Length: 146
Ligand SMILES: [Zn+2]
Image (cartoon, rainbow, N blue to C red; front, side):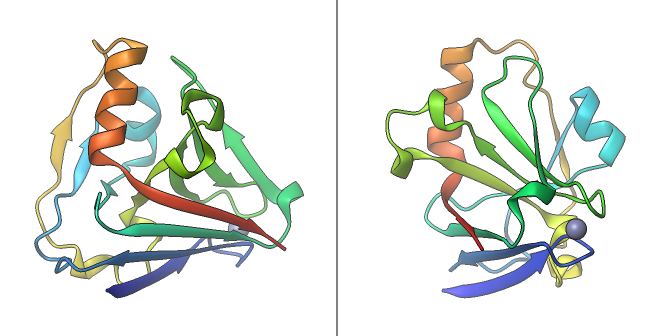
């Protein structure tokens, strides 16, 4: 597995995206929801890979929820960078079922993720459809503190 490191700007949140895929081959998704458009966010996930999110100070981690409220959008409340989204713990059966996407712009080697972003629009999904899609297409995630 190759590890792609990243994080927010101030260093409170660190990311490690582990994948066997070449970053130039990983699909980059440009979600068209109102939140992602405002961030011009480009997201990636490898269902066979893994994301680790390490937070130094949990008081400076903001978990934003909106819409169906089935995911936490992780934003550093110190520097304002949006780094990842995690399907909310109460929306999955067990903690080890948690799934995430990483925001490519928050990775140190973001330029290696060179595929043209694919616009995606999930507005019409039900809660069940959304959870099923994330189980298939998002990746396992570990969130650690301190
Ligand atoms: Zn920060």
